[in-house]
Length: 247
Image 1: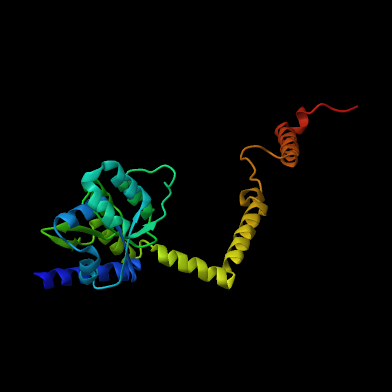
Image 2: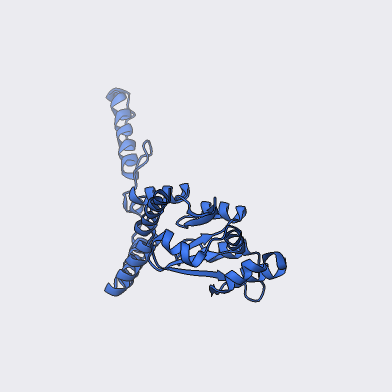
């Protein structure tokens, strides 16, 4: 059973390595609920988690998580002692602490740029992590640490990237840096500016067309010719003997 769990964990870690750029040492963000479950089940986090994930780790937490444990009293004193042994990552709530789940979600930002794992037993935090893209989830069940399978959101994101519908954040950053190195960003801006000037300076093609003459409206020359023709017709119509003699 242990070998099967490790194989599944290895497969899941490979998924995050190849698709989201995870590298060792893996950064594991833990909260008080995970440490409390480890304490009850007699799990040595520092010893067992690196063996299970088969790599180097950095176990860490935030100031908000520690503050929450302090406020909850003596029942979670053991979990607080465990967390104090780990590294503390700086969060944006140093002056005004927020609930642990809210703080850990904010540490992920939009794209989990620091490649954090989340270790928790909190249902609310677990649901939020499963809705995020590219965030591995750890929890304790049946006295063992379990790395959850990639969430449907992460799998759908990878499929969209492979189909060419999306670009990963790492690809966007690399493309941007390559353009900066080759000076293509300035050239693109100049081209856009030239296109806008050309579009604004060109005349309207409809205004260059010749005006069409309206049918049925005679020009001045045609009007004079028609008058002369009508006079000649009248003269021809009257016979010579009926014309009045001129003195």
